[in-house]
Length: 61
Image (cartoon, rainbow, N blue to C red):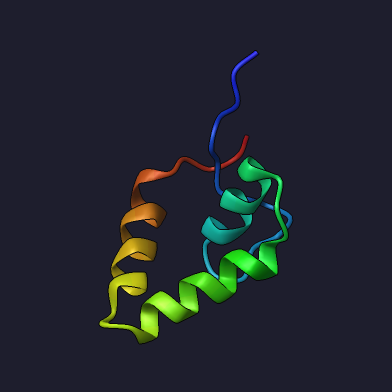
């Protein structure tokens, strides 16, 4: 059975991207959010990553 990446319905703050990534890699969602915030503060790459991921990653059914 293959794992699939979905936006989380349970661990969502904005779109559920960080929650979905945390569930996929089986790590704490807080760590993923901190990494995203750090990247966002560092040249804005986290914001771009989050926006692209929010558009590309499908919703959990």
